[in-house]
Image (cartoon, rainbow, N blue to C red):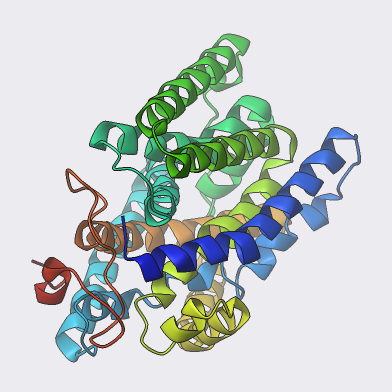
Length: 371
């Protein structure tokens, strides 16, 4: 899947960006395996930094995506559609938090699982390799999303449910009572077994399909290594630290590279392997809406009754805001996936940023958010 130029960018990004991130995650995993205690305050640091670096900002350019997918300049209509999408879905999520916080938390986890799986599936396909059936693509998506969302529940159920309690208590409501079944050994063993089975099936099917070429075998080796690394990382690193690092350094960074290939100003830097310039340029472009989101977060803290000031309470408030932004962001990314051929019977071509930047798919040139 993808043009040769795009696949080359993703291979370069893997060497220069993603492998160093792998190394960071591996070091943190080894440190935790060695029994080193990481202070609670330090565990929240990645989430705090993610307010301004990569994490929260990574969806700040969604309003530009439909036009850039079509290879044209953004206009009031294309921007307005995304703004309306965010307003409607964000308000719906906020209302759900107000009336049924436990349900809202479960929806947030499920949405994030699908979205983070979306991101990793796209990167797998964009690197090139043999065509992968839709069934295998769904298996990879679910596996990749389940690693950060469900492995911490297996390994650290009390911490996981503590975050759930802090988040469902936002606004002064009593936190939703923890489901005792989530703490039971039987549930955790069953969930762990289901995750292992999903991994064996998805990776086994991918390996079987890719066995005929050296490129396919390299693809499978890379996928297996990443899955094993992430499984170990989320199994031994405290969940708040692990998910904070993953959100900023893994998921968001990959999405920034994806957006750079749609941006006529950043694409040349991406093609040249100048990823530092890509991140700086993206951060500068995303800054206004990032500041707007931060202002909204501060406003929520001020107006919500009895908003706590502990690290856990502040993280809960942040997660409520993130959940309201995640659902419309997932819709935008789903449109990207559709236009970029992720779910075609045979994965298609990843469109370039704009006319003159490279070949675009016919559907991307003609589409908008609502088509």
